[in-house]
Image 1: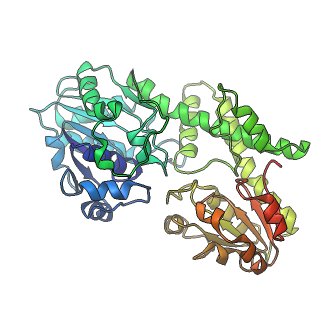
Image 2: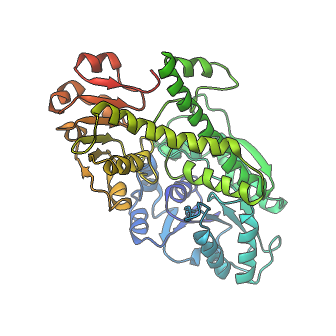
Image 3: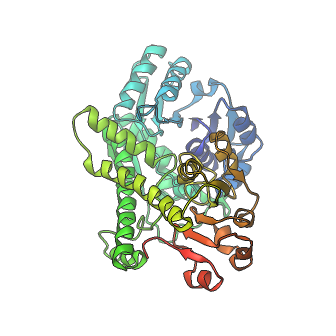
Length: 453
């Protein structure tokens, strides 16, 4: 098939590379010339393990990149993979989706049936909006000349390449049997795990992951599945973080509590890992939109709202631990290790590090930061922060009165903590991920503190 992916971000670039590797002719459309040049050169416009290898394999043969929409007229499937950031009122900004829909409409081929696939995370009812905008600009008829399908993405940043080839489920939201046939043909190799020879180690073998489940629904249900899934995961994280605070009060260990809970097959182990809270480009935005939708229609989502409030409290709780240990923050130096919301990504949007850095600065502290991949984006998104960007974690610790481990990158787990300690002014370390060996840290002279212990 001829496929178009509009948007060369985390979703668009991975989706495009995957279908190109599987033998389709794919054109990525983006207005950012840097992303277009990168894809044309077979290099990744983002940091995502395995993506570089895929792009190198298919760039210029089955994968192409452009700033114009000419390829839409030749496409059987057009993916909308643009951003939907939060507006000031915390509702989703659909301006990029609307512009993509209008531009698609101006380039559709009236003699060629096309499936428009919305992969962006969008409010319920957006498929209908996209359909009407395309009809307005194209003069074509939805259900006859084209169909709009909701096909939400469930890619985990840091594992996106693995997830695109070995997904848990493929959600197809449409009432059109014709569109369903096209989508099943498109996803056939993924469902059957065929044509993966070109992966060449770019993605690990599936191991025990079962084949993907094909699930069909209406567009509105498909759109809500994405929001409901992310909100549920946010609730689960907030729950274990609140349990961690109770563990500290009672003298229990949240690691043991989480492991014991996870042994129940109804609960499972995933997302029961303590942290300073959930953050990033998805959970904050998606929970906010879900709450806005619920308020709009008078259907209160009190559990999701409580999870958001608990998440905000957890970050402030971590700041209070540092403040309590140092007695006062003015004139003190605090180092933050990890600026991305999780390891193996360069995505530093709306992270706990951003909120903590601002909070510490407002309390008078000097802040030093490090991240192996996220510093460039963090700096670009937070030009007003007066933090010191360090080239190594050891540089962050040097002269610091306290350090906070926020993101459990492998480089932090592997660093020589024993050698780094003497350079600290005060060897206080708050490990918000409970990933370091507390006995060794204490043995090496750190004033070590985890969460929930």
